Amino acid sequence: MSPLDVGDEYEEQSPAYEEGWAAYHNELDRSENPHDAESDPAEFEEWDQGWFDALNEAEEIEQ
Image (tube, rainbow, N blue to C red):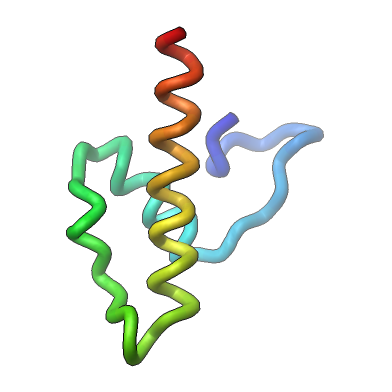
């Protein structure tokens, strides 16, 4: 389920997480995280997690 979908299972995520999710679906590379790991570590990690969750979901669908 996409974090942008609304439903009973939807859990609101941070904007950085949703940006990462969208970045994967817009075919951006993980290295294009706009948040700096040193100065903005929480947002960096949330964006990264969103990107990875989207990747994992896409791989599950392909199987």
